[in-house]
Length: 68
Length: 87
Image (tube, rainbow over all chains, first blue to last red; front, side):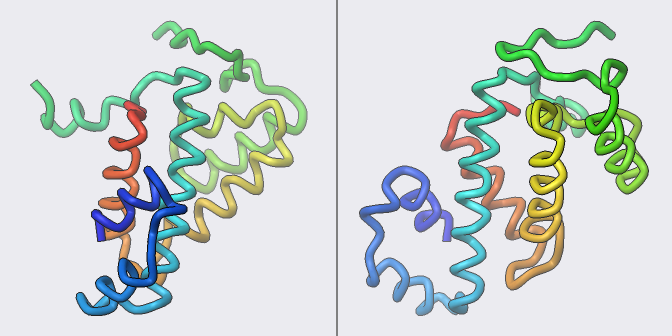
């Protein structure tokens, strides 16, 4: 699934029916695949707005001791 | 704590008035948090749109759907990394 959303993020126009068939083969349902696309596209939207405004990271990683 | 200087000006919590203040108050009351997250303040120039952004985020992302919350967060984090978004 992450391979698929990577392709949707970087080159959605290059995704194919085979890509989707592979996901079905892994057990993902049509509604789940569709929702994964919604989330992927939604975060493309939020990421661009956040980067364009230049808002500060929220420090969630530091809060959870996940960064040095 | 001094506000982080953003490339495009946005309306901070304490400066919000009118409709922006109203939407901020609604979100704080609903979330139980004291301060608006940065991403939502980015939409403060259009509080009508901000209300819709909050709504569709709740509908698609911050809820159990066809995908569970963990899967949604994994996709969101991975995509945000691909998009070079530190936020």
